[in-house]
Image (cartoon, rainbow, N blue to C red; front, top):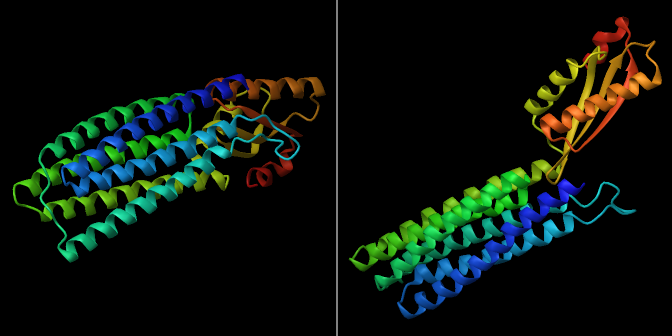
Length: 299
């Protein structure tokens, strides 16, 4: 449990850094966008304000996830993390659609004003900072195995691309290609929506107890190699936040003692933890019977 709490705290660190960076960038972009007449930079600033909300949502989810189990949550609060990822995906989808809608309306109405070129420098610096933040949070997410922080890192990358596109649009608009502002904004909006859809799919997959077959195949193959295990008729797994829970049924010699059966379960639990980082394994032991082996393996 201590290792699980440590992982969540690592993820919280990334969320806090994201909040600080986004607050500073949002203030800078809104101020510079206003004084240098750059509507695209101002829009990017408002986009970063929504990112502050996303990071706060993930941070709250991570803090909730490490609360101890109680009477109403016997498995703990680990699913608060994918719930936070789900909320983040909604925010990203909302922002993406809003950016796309506003850019189309601006193009239709002809509300295009050439901005000051210096605004492009702010957008370009922001792009570099956000890409560094993306790499930082992605590395932390892998270390902590945090879906919530991974969602934040994907949002960081989308925002880095947004700022880069904003810089290009500002420069293009400044030299006379005013339409480039709207075209780039539309492309960026589609990138944001795509990222939001991916985060949504991953979080709902986890919340619906989805689990990839390739991992189950690896677990089953390794368990079959353990001495005294004659067959593995059933194996299931699910995720609670970043923690893997496995339920497996094994067949052993019917003459095996209770102590011997217990020893085999201990070996399985230790193997899955050390090789695959499975935090909890529930092993059900049944006697092996050649007459119904085939039927059991089809379960």
